[in-house]
Image 1 (cartoon, helix red, strand yellow):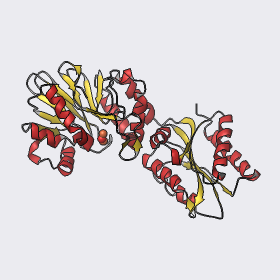
Image 2 (cartoon, helix red, strand yellow):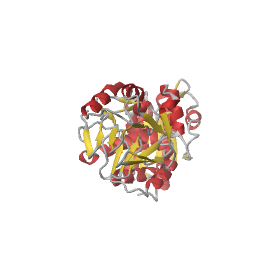
Image 3 (cartoon, rainbow, N blue to C red):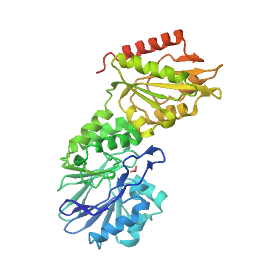
Image 4 (cartoon, rainbow, N blue to C red):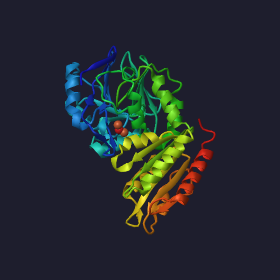
Length: 392
Ligand code: FEO
């Protein structure tokens, strides 16, 4: 990635990962991602803010060389996860005078994960500042976005917030600013859904904590920079709110069509009631799309056949994932089919312990659905309509 200027003496020096197809071996990346790092040159000192994934560390070195950086005084590390901290050891090899600046918890993680020596660190605390001469960095603890040690760095003179994962997006782009690519918000939602959603309530507190800052630019460590910070802050406020949408997500899997017939019937009947429906055929589903759909939906109906005397493993996976992501979903239902018996409902509902949801009465069908079964699905639709009656 080329070196790019945000404002005078502040440059982006990280790497774009155009070809990365999956993150955390979990969420597909249709638009790639980036690992952003930034150089802030003050009149007396130079700071590198975050680094890059070790796979791209040579790009970081090349960019520092291209920018003519001969001395780094401080490496500010906002987050210990390796896609941002993993190149610190290499940077220390090339710039041995650099001091690694972070909070105590992050320091301890980086000693464990990266074997960085204790003597390399300077520990800072919430609200501390660090002078680079004519530029000042302020450190603000924003825990659990999405690890316990996460913090952000604010450049006071230029009003730039270096937010690391917070407000980031999985989006590789040659454009420096998010506003030049409308799809970036979707990349940010994909990122939020995968790793931030379980921490909604603490994110609310962190956004509140940042509200006193005058922010002209948010420079995250994934995806383009937000030149109009309100775009991403308002999107986050919507995602973390307790408001749900008049939407039903249906993750389903079907082996011999019985469950599929039920799902198609349910989709059609819900649409007739003006309820937005998003069915996902699990064996073909992009997990990121499913996670994004969970950000807003009021109701999730998991649909599964019975196989090996229980729920289909694809339905188990989707239910387990939903429980881990802790969406603000209010209602969960289970529908499906069986040949002779099984414990599908007990298995799936037993996986939902993290969620504060009302479990709707299940609809189970022996063999292919008959008239009574469609009546039961009609009752399920009535129940969903009743649950959603106050939603837009
Ligand atoms: Fe982008 Fe939590 O690392």
